[in-house]
Amino acid sequence: MNLAATWASFVRSATNVWTWLQIDSSEATLVKFGILLVVVFLLLLVLSDVYRGEIQNQNVTIDITSHENRFGYGDKDVVFTQQTFDIQSEKLPADVNLLHSFTIVDGVRRIDKRIVLDRRSARLRMVRTAHRVDHGQIALAPDIVLALKNRAEYLQRQELKRHNTNLWRRVRMLFAKAKDDATAEPHSYMVRIHFPLNPYFLLFIHPDKDVKATGWLTLLTSLFAVLTEFLF
Image 1 (cartoon, rainbow, N blue to C red):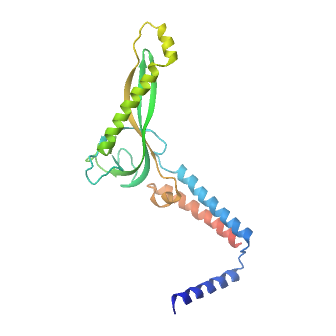
Image 2 (image 1 turned 90 degrees about the horizontal axis):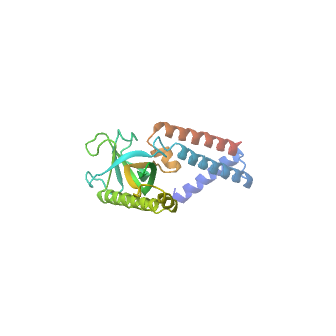
Image 3 (image 1 turned 30 degrees about the vertical axis):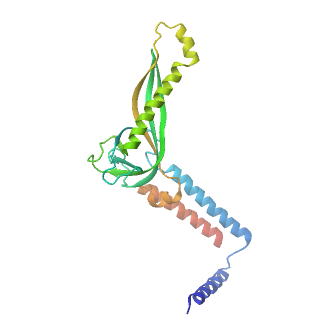
């Protein structure tokens, strides 16, 4: 029996089963079926956003160092120890936001500032010991580290310049005894990690098993509701 005949036989059998089950195949039913599938997909997107992980949407104070492109690491790799981020995965896709914080000191006034240095797609690479990177650090490619530190210094100078040339500060300084310009007091770098917003990541890649179990439970419950609506 050739492939075409086998396929035709399968289609006839499937059609007979469909007819025997008396499944409603009207356009209205198919539209409702499609709507339910879209709702399930949107629900999984919401779960993906809610359960991205403990470090999602948190600014974590960190030190930045270079992995010097050793150990097979490349420009996309962000390396850290398990003690720094216990993500339970040795290679994980994510979007990484890198920030810098500092304080503008203007006499008795202290103004905290936070600037975004870079947003990039990355591979999170967790190592279990501090052999390749120290605790409390993230290691990036050397050129990226240099670019980040140069950008932090540049943006810090720009913020300080804007503060010193502000019109209201100039007016205030007319009546002040000390005429010195404000200075910047650097603090630290920070990182914010965003896991991908998609159902596939939630169901198959997410490092937290409990989160994956929640996603699968939601998916199976929703699909059962879809199947019930379609069959009955």
